[in-house]
Length: 162
Ligand SMILES: [Cu+2]
Image 1 (cartoon, rainbow, N blue to C red):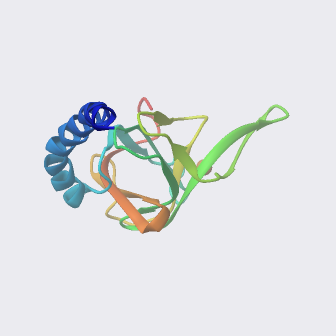
Image 2 (cartoon, rainbow, N blue to C red; image 1 turned 180 degrees about the vertical axis):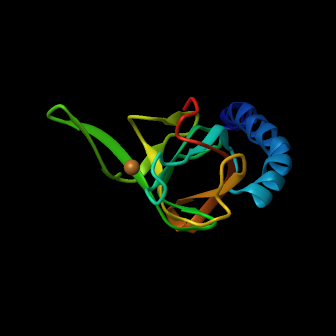
């Protein structure tokens, strides 16, 4: 009895160590989470491409890594200075590319996804004057429970490389 208790304790120890090792990293991650959004979410290469014709919607692309410890489903988006923003998916319909509102974008822990031309993107409607070429747009992705992750996207013209 005593012996099995001892072994049980030994079995537990590595798990406890692992948990406390994770805990050691937590303060830094949570600090940045408070400032910038959801812990573990990292955005790279974010850009907002202006429409070739003024008055049309713009599109936002970026690479997203989920380095956090849980899966996250992003349901919607907001862009400061725009009337509205919608997460769009693209698909081929016959020989035409069509896009429509995407179902929630699930990013598993440890996983990543790309918002890219011809695929997922954030479509931005009603661009205000503050959203001009060479500037930055404040983009917020919103997950279940109204957890929000805000990042900056460089604003570029339609002619630039996407
Ligand atoms: Cu779109």
